[in-house]
Amino acid sequence: MSGHSKWATIKHKKGALDAKRGQLFTRIIREITIAAKMGGSDVDSNPRLRLAVQQAKDGNMPKDNIDRAVKKGAGELEGVSYEDVTYEGYGPGGVAIIVQASTDNKNRTAAEVRHIFSKYGGNMGEVGCVGWMFKKKGEIVIPAEGLEEDAVMEMALDAGAEDVDNEGEVFIVTTDWQEMLTIRETLEKKGLKIESAKFEMIAENTVKLDEQRATSLFKLINAMEECDDVNDVAANQEVDDEIMEKIM
Image (cartoon, rainbow, N blue to C red; front, side):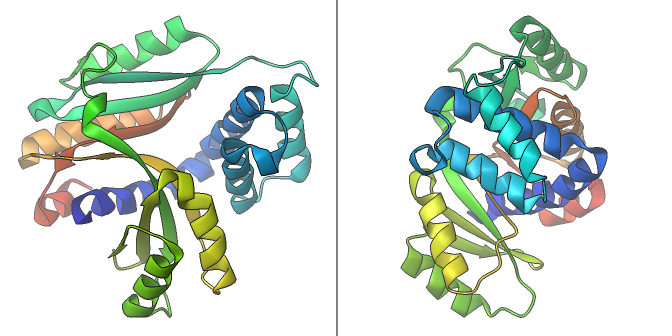
């Protein structure tokens, strides 16, 4: 998991910038709305909504904003209707890429995603062309300050986690996606501070990139993540730490 967790750490750091740009709240509100629409407004019986509401609380979103988004999704208030869409394609060096988005206009979003693929040396493919390379996982980020790696590893594995990676500033705990919320709650009860928890698409195999292709790929990913409708981007790249430090 170490190759994936390195990218997870980068995405974690970028997430702070997203919050400063105001994108994070917009995306979380959209996710709450969709989750409530698909699974109802009861947080206890709707795991997707439960996770979205927890992410909103982690980001200090006002309770009124959360409640309003839930009501819109459940049809109790008028609002824009969003739906989930997934796009698949290839980036520089043949890297497989999955883009997960939520949109109120699929034609607009598809055109934007296709343009970004093309602009940065990739191409959008058909649904299913690379999806089989990825598995959905849960990912819990724990600040490492003051913690011993062995202790975190023991607590996480005892709670049912699949793996733990020490990335310096944070520990990345990987879980079965269906168990992530339960594992998060268990770790919190054990006194661990959770910085974030979300679902990720994790590649089962990787493509190694040189510096030039890695630079192009990260430009593509950055552009994709700046698209308002995009929630997450996953790729199966493998990049040496030395190259990673140069291009980031």
